[in-house]
Image (cartoon, rainbow, N blue to C red):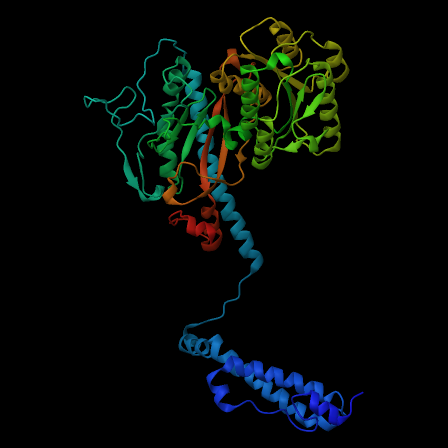
Length: 544
């Protein structure tokens, strides 16, 4: 559409000749700019030749292609270091041999080695279970038992006169590189008791006493498998026996919030996956401290739920109020994000009106029934947690409609406050539906009373003596100091049951034993095909 004269005015290159060369001085000083100018010239030249016969410029195009390829090769060789790599390879060429690897055999060998590694960890836990159950079987409870044990918080602590504190005897701690240079005692374990529990309570003292027999097994396991790290027993009573022994430091408020029964490894080993609907009374009688206790109770229940569980929370008075309105009529996975989201919404609850429990129960049963039919939930245990300051009826017609005679949904009732006027109705509701009743009068009572439901849900496993081995999902090890970096762990755990004849039919859970396996350990096993000499567990390695 343009004449040759017009084209020559518009384009930076003449239509009948090769593109102008790049100045040699510029090309030597700026190789990258040289390439860019070359590309620009090619583009301009291409625009020129589109208006003329292709055969006329065929020779010129070949020259351009050759020049362009040469420039690319020159720049690539200079900045990629390929020539240096070739030189290095020549130096070692005589010592290099090509070895064919059978991929299938390699995978089979790796699978076998991994299976052996997992088996070792499981067997270490199984030996702890057997030792714990045998020790409890031989033990007779003594309400007056006096026993000085190594309290993980009090060890090596002295009073103003220089004397060791009670339960704080001398406990030798030596830095150990296998435990990231933490000061530990590889000969003994020690015991951590939650701050909200009395460390000389008879149940605690008796449990610590009979579990002392685990020390020999801890040491024996470590001798058999030096790659083991933390081994422990989490008691259903709340104390936590850990090997090797290590000193625990409270926070700035003098509190240690750690409770082993809230840990994922404990929950997964002690109970089966469950679907839970939490009903919270927000009628006018729940104003003030009662509503505060109720919210804390809900929060503590959430602490006991793991990733295998599903839940929802409904507040009720004359109407139903889903704590998260966007999730009406369904259950959500009890992962960390969802639980924290619901906790934030608990603060928005306020008390008013009259409590209509029948409406709430109907909604809860319908939700559990529909969710179970979809196959989306745990497809295992189901429960309704009722948190209220009283019930005026037993609501047996509702239970007869939805839950009897199979009683697939357990009812756990939490009476809030000191008054016991409506306690009988709540007790009946729980007992008639294979659940548990408890009364919570103060905030200090919340933690222990909430934990009772775990014992009930564990009964089927205990009665059937199901010692299932559980491997948890990855989590961050909380026992390491911050300056040691973050270490991802998985835990292999197994429940411990009472084998005493008089209690076996009741299904008493004694606790859970476990041992940690760093994820780096599995990575090293895969990469090196050997874990004879494990490398130090550092955050840097995990990130790689």
